[in-house]
Length: 110
Image (cartoon, rainbow, N blue to C red; front, side):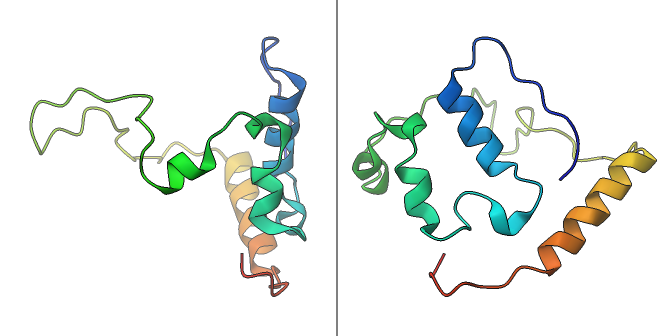
């Protein structure tokens, strides 16, 4: 990924840090991929008060429950038509694909 990211002023330093860790330009340097795997994510300061056990036991209440009209209602989703990508976005997507193709498994199981 390449580009400049600006963060809202109300974001704390822990939020900015974890976002930057997920958005590292080189996929093999991103949090969750580097040595330590998912434990690095779970131990990050931004998740200090997060109840992982409650999540894993499926006991966590959903933060948002969307309103739907019926089982076929897709109004809460985007259409998925992204035909308006500009040339820069196409180049970025190609670079991301090339970077992803160079990933080497470190054997951590993640």
